[in-house]
Image (cartoon, rainbow, N blue to C red; front, side, top):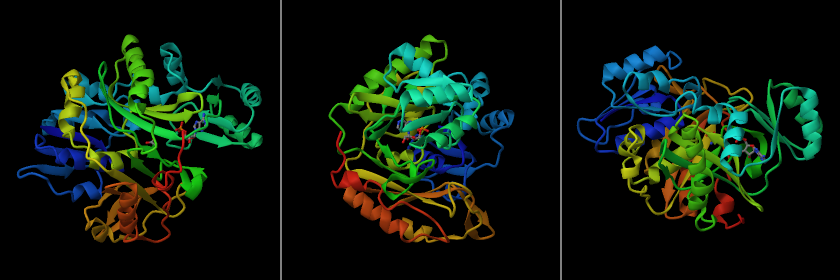
Length: 425
Ligand code: AMP
Ligand code: GLY
């Protein structure tokens, strides 16, 4: 099988890495990929892994590349091309695509659309008002009281949500958005549950937890995600079954009933509140950096499952198989991330970090001559497995300690509370 992976981040690096472990996969092309993917070694004789520079907002160019390489499967990694509708012309060209259509990707592209789907399908989520004027927003903000949750309706690359007890800050964020959701505050630990779907059948992954804030102890601004771990030793029994039954399956069914079946990865971001599970958000693709923690533990060959989903054959698929133990991914971010990440800083120590079987997934990296340099906010995700979270943390942080980037930032407490047994539901 020949697979085209669209995207250039840490999630795409992890996807290509996992696809390369699948004996049925003979070639992976990453478009445009990144320097980490470019030096990935094939896992099997005769397997090819290459990066191909292409502008992924040029849908015709991506379709042409898929045809030229004879792709059996295209996996679209990031949300922006999915929401822009890249999956549609690929499907129209008769190519199997893992990734939702433009219409189904609205589950991430518009928070108001997602709320409407959840209301119709009776999926539990926070109460929210959709507001289009500052006056409406102020009324909704005062109706809920602090802490205030103000969400830009559209895609905002992790910067759309403000959670604050400062009324003026809440009003200011609302004023800066064309359409906002003012939502009730949801308390309790957060869970990321991913499910693969062919539009009808769903196949959940094991749950993970993401760390959205920049600093230790969840301080500082929201980011795209500073680290993740999986599985969740504190999760209640049957959590995955409960979320699948109450959240994932009804959402997939509702999208199909609307005539816009969802084929790809449905990401549910959830809060386990005292009143039960509540959806915080849906994404229409694999999460970053949860994927970098999850895929190294996945035993089921990835290419076969994604192909089964893309071709409507998920019902024949066995449940996913996982290695025992835990995995922890720690993001190393550039100086001044997230406000204005600095580019061009030299990155060293990646080979040493990887020496011990740890995976270093590239995201914001570029080559400057022979030097690997920073070129984005989240630069690398260092992912390590272990018998338990303590061991995975030790290995991940030992590897992070090998990496040198001037002014870089990382959290030191990824998975710490879980490892100490300090998370309760
Ligand atoms: P989102 O982009 O919707 O995932 O929001 C980013 C982060 O903001 C989430 O991971 C939560 O930590 C926080 N957040 C979003 N919505 C709520 C809410 N209703 N209550 C509390 N925290 C929230
Ligand atoms: N980990 C958060 C995201 O992928 O949106």
